[in-house]
Length: 204
Image 1 (tube, rainbow, N blue to C red):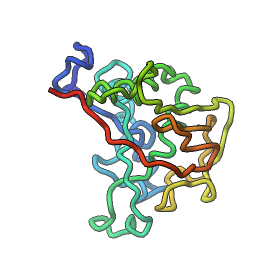
Image 2: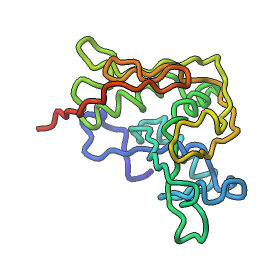
Image 3: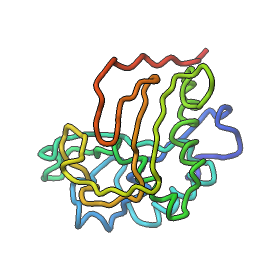
């Protein structure tokens, strides 16, 4: 954390940093329960490391909340250690996880929106994305903060077929997702349709 600064606005930074949701949630105390399921690079560490990441996120030294989504098959996560693949499937539950921390009073909703959308677009200079603005692509997600759900094998959308959050109960749900203005997800159902569009970057 000593390598990063919050002295400049994000658009002026020459060095930026992200933090992954699994490093904000898991600690080494979860290894006896989850084992190689939470093997990743960099590795899950102590509660002190987790607390330092939260502090860096909230004080602006860490710019983006990411997932490092890695949907390995569960068979690829088996011992021995040197052969077990590193990485977790996380993209489906990243936002519900952060919303749960909001409901615990740890992070404002505005900060979640900024770190998972606005800052991403700013950091990577995405053209006409990442903000609710006239003329921008309508990439939207709708959530219900009062609709809890439990992760089960039946509601997993990962093709790898597993999650480290199996049987975990989240207090909030993602109800709808729109991609380029088209409804792509509706209360547990993926709606097939036109493919996405190539991202355009405003880089000179």
